[in-house]
Length: 382
Image (cartoon, rainbow, N blue to C red; front, top):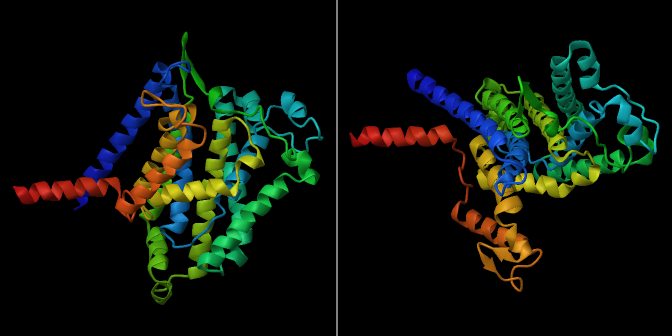
């Protein structure tokens, strides 16, 4: 049993390492003008959405708390990261209508003291700060909100997300958030390059994929720990969990804060990918999209959330894009394929998937479980 588990973990680590190596190769091989450049964009955006979906699944799927405030926490993370990474020489240009209240740039300050390593460390600290800012707000609202259950909790957290979006666009907070104007000119994924001799290695896609991979790995460790088992016990039966000595309030607020931390980190990653941080990008529709990814992949499956996120982004941003331009799969029919038709086809595909996969693509299983099942069948056949 232990040997099998070690073998499964080793295979998983090797597959992850191979995936990261492949991403680096694709970053160098595929140019922005190539027809396959959309693959890189799907990997960049899909990896960040995968992290957001997994963090939502931690709360909704593993703890059984139905929250719809994810976009609000991602917004907090995006703004925190952007504010703390804008260089001083362009800060007055970005805050052209306000006098910037925060003039600290982590990458710039540490970069001046430690060089390129300090710049990278500053970016990492800004990402961690984005998660911590979301965690602090989650703790403050979680104390009263987590007393609610089911639909009432969903409505309360959805209202919180809308309030946060409105507050961040409030003119009185302009010196901090820049009001309704976007934050830009901060460190984004295009800034990550590695120079070896005379060769420049692009890390544009590798950085968001690595960020999502590390964070998802931490969530996997958490789910498989005693805290993760406590979360699952609360999801299955709160009365039984409390009878076993599990502190419901403590574990609920812990799950809520941890989920919000990674939502804030995914918001920082989204800002890095999009190149701007603006409250209008984090509407409630973003929360619904993330929830759809979780449902498509399977509630209670981390692998399913990743698969659902990648399929959602690939289908909506790449594969079905031709339906809006009048040309799809070599068929030129502008009378049929017109603007907005992509969303119609995408909705039909989602309904078909839900009909045939009632519990999502993966259900509550993980990818290693499929390999174990196949190994058992092969052993039984022998």
